[in-house]
Length: 151
Image (cartoon, rainbow, N blue to C red; front, side, top):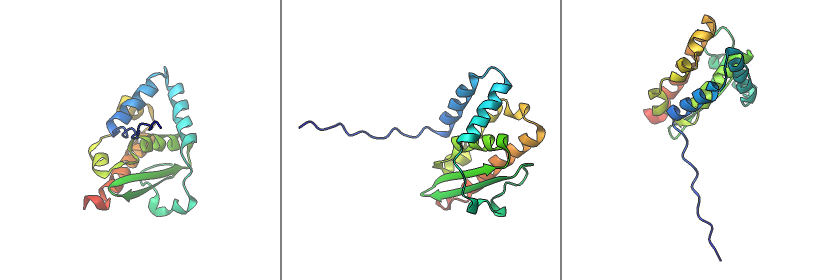
């Protein structure tokens, strides 16, 4: 009888690798209309957030749209859930979760969101949206800093 080779799951890409992959993914888009369409597609693929998590305490302050952000921390790994009442903002938070969710709190705290600048989001979003994106990043990192494994 032949034994199947034991397969180990591939290691999760780092936050920096995920950012590079996003930049590569968006590089195929020639103009901002195509990039906005891709962001909106990300919004549609973001898993639904339970209504029970959409509380006032979970709202991200500094966003003109309503954004809810929730974090779970287990064994030092932070997993995020999020939602927004605006489709473009929902897509932006989906990008952040794609990059940061499922990583150790220390890695989240150490990794700056360079992809925001590399994708041109900092200059192609309205000032309100750009400020909201900064507020979302700040909240992600605040939750990571509160992860008990860091204590």
